[in-house]
Each structure stands twice: as C-alpha cells, then as structure tokens.
Amino acid sequence: MRCSTALLTTLLATPIFANPSFEPISIEAHEYIGGWEFYVGGGLASFDCNDDDLPELYAAGGEAPAALFVNTSTKAALDFRKETPEALAIQGMTGAYPIDIDSDGITDLAILSVGENMLLKGEGNCTFRPFDALEFSSSSHWTTSFSATWEANNSLPTLAFGNYVDREDPNGPFETCDVNTLYRPNGKSYATPFELSPGYCTLSMLFSDWGRNGRADLRVSNDRHYYVKGGEEQMWAMEETPRLYTQEDGWESFSIWGMGIASRDLTGDGLAEIALTSMGDQKIQSPIDRSAPRFTDYTFERGTTAHRPYTGGDGRPSTGWHVAFGDIQNNGRDDIFIAKGNVERMPGAAMKDPNNLLIQGEDGNFTEFGDVAGIASLVRSRGAVLADLNNDGLLDLAVNNRKAPLEVYQNTSTETGNWLAVQLSQNSTNTDAIGSVIEVKTQSGIQTREVTIGGGHAGGSLAAQHFGLGDHTDGELRVIWPDGTEGAWQAFKAGQKITVRNDT
Figure 1 (cartoon, rainbow, N blue to C red):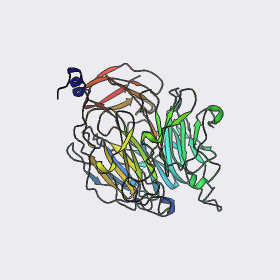
Figure 2 (cartoon, rainbow, N blue to C red):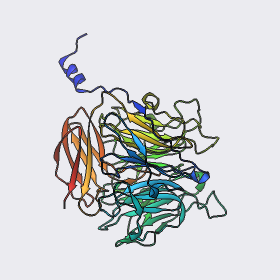
Figure 3 (cartoon, one colour):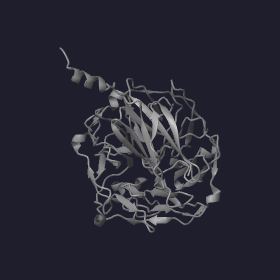
Figure 4 (tube, one colour):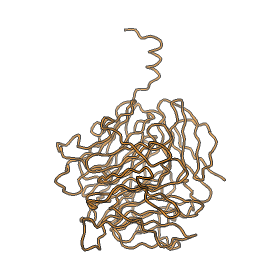
C-alpha cells in the first residue's frame, strides 16, 4: 500500500497518543468519616506550604482530624508523608481552600466546618495560626462550599461560604436550607456578612467572569434532595447590593442535585464551559453570548452525562461530587474527572459507582477511560485534586473518600504531548492574580484559562496553571490581569514552568 505525499505529511503531523494510565501509590491511611452531617463534604486541597515547589495535600476528616500530607516526591515517583501540625488537625472539618488572603506571599486557608468556619494565616514551613487581625467571625453552620474573588480596589478578597441544611431548625431537615454568607471587606477587616438568601442547600459555588465583562459573579449549585421544591440553581450578580439573576436577565431556572462546579473554555471561543455534577446526569453547559447569563446544555451524544456506572455491575444512577478539567495526555484537549459515590446508602443510587475519566476526542466528544486508566475506584469518593504533583509535566490524581482510605495516583501515561505550566504573581494585592485570564497560543489556536478560587466539592488547588500543547514545542502567551490590563504576548518553549509577573 502506498500513501500519497500529502496523506503521509498529514499522518506524521498528527501525534498518536497512548491510552491514559495511572498507578496507585502507597500513602498512610486517612478517611473522611462521621454521621449524617458528614455525608457531604470531604474536600481535598493542594498547595505548597513549605516553599519547595511541590504541592502538599490537605484532606478533611469529618469527625476524624484533618490530615496534611507533605509532598516528598521526585519526578520519577510520587511520595507523601503524613505530617499534620496541631493547627491543621481540625475535627468537624468538611473542606478547605488555599488562598493568600493578606497578600504577603504565603498561602492561607479558608476552613469549612460543621460549626464555625475559620481563616488560618500561613506563616511558612506549613505552620498556621488563627487570622485574628481580620476580625472574621462565623456563626455555626453546616458549610460545604466556598469561593473567593477580589473586587474593585479592595486589599482583601470577597469570601463566599455556602451552607447546607440549617441544623437548628426543628422542622428539618427537608425544606430547611440555611442561607449562604458573603463577606465583603471593610478596609483591613471583615464586617458582618451579607446573607445570600434564599439558600437552597448549597454544595458548590464559584466566582467567575462568565461573560468576560470585567466582573466575577457567583455561580451556586444546590441540592434539591433537601430543598425538595421551590428551589433552583442560582447565580448572583455581584452589584453593589448582590442580586439573583432572573429570567429577565436571560437566566433559565433549572433544578438538579447540584454537588460540584468546574469551569474551562473547551471550544476556544474565550468563554468558559461550566461542569455541574449531580445525582444522575452530569451537566456541561456552554455560554451562548457575553451579554446575558444564558447557557445551553451539551447533548447526551457528547458523552459527558456519565449518568450510570460503566463498571462494577450496579446499573442504578450515579452520584457525582468533585469535578475537574485537565489535559491528561497533554494533547491540547481538556478532559474531565468526576469523583463518584453513594451519599451513604441511598437505595435509588448506585453503591458501586466508579470515578469517571472522560477523555476528549478530536471531535470534541468525550469517551470513558476510567477503567482503562486504572482509576475506577468503587468506594464513596468525595473531594479530589487533579494536578501535577511531582513537576514531571503530567497531571496526577488524589481522591478523598468517605469511610475508605485516601487514594493517590501517579499519571504514568506514555507517548504524551508537550506541556507548559504558568505561575502568575503580583507585587501587591492579590498576589496569585485571581481573576486573571491566561491565553496560550500555538499553531493550533488559543487556549484560554480563567484563574479562580472555588468550585469543585469542598476543596481546591492553588498551583501553576497546566496547559497541554500536543506536538507544539513553542508558542506565545499573554495575561489579562484582574484589573483588565492586557500584558504583551511573550514567546515560550514547551516543557517548563514559567512565572509571569505583574509589576505595575
């Protein structure tokens, strides 16, 4: 058989990627446990707290103490050592999000609890203490979600805490959802929080500039299991007085068993798609335009609903929790990880419910590779981290589980593409440049990434932004900073982590 020169050139120009592959690594035991107040939550956070350029893992324990796993990995092998300082061995914790609150260059933590939430100040070398100077105070809530952004010229971030069932309401638990709380800074401290009401039992929230209009609004995903009726998904317009978007704004009312949120531009149009996990169908929504909060659902044929288990022999509907986008094979196309697991023993939902790894094909559709890749765990998964944990250019995976040990997987995929990691830095306020947009340009087009804090399920990552590049060895990138300033395009070579600084 003979190939024409044109066909041969095309074949050589299209890289062939092997199937994704992960290997579990041994790690000291840790489980997320507890009664009904800990059926939800179970977040997992990742951040570098000892300044060695390797992200640690911080896992909620519920009724057990939370645990810090110090990263001692090499590029050849992942390795973690359980070493939890007293300040982080918190009981009653549902999750945590890393954030540099006071912009001193050291990562702090927002702690979500069944009880009072906390802000912990990072002091370096993985030590933390209460953030007394901020005058932050929290009533007792059952908190299960968080997001943060910097508004206007504030030196401190705006913080949103999402709360679940109001445990103090004697008529509960059904139809007794708690209100959510929004902390806007008052100079160098936090005033009394603004109540985001009504609350519909929130399990995930995310500040995002969905239309690239210069303002981050707050997307809120709610669990209809407890609000039962009259509730819906929400998005708050972050005006001087926050208000809910309505149908008059273009927002379409819909209800799901909402549990997790993630955002990523999958189409190259500069606007981020939204992933929403639920019981049964998982949703991917695409924005229709920049002027109104209108979205359209991906169809079943796109392969993203992940509504039933694909292995394990249980055909009942799935239950999705944490969701994350990431390019597993560095082929230039983002994939989707979804943590799955029954709430406890809900008879209408699958008990053997494997985590999903949805790999995006060249046609933009997704195919399940969880079993092929070796991450099809059948325990009750909750929070997760999809990040390069050993700086080898491949995204690894860690999953916090309810009543089952924490799992960590090293990405051992072969015949992968090139990659780039981009770390942002600002000299003054908002050191990690939350709210920035990174654009990475190669001959295949532009990848657009908004830098956010929040989403997932009860836990988040603070790390360099990872881009798969396929067979491209170089390109250009620029940053649109939180204040709207557009940085200059600058050339890069693949296969490295680079830091882009905003010195203005």
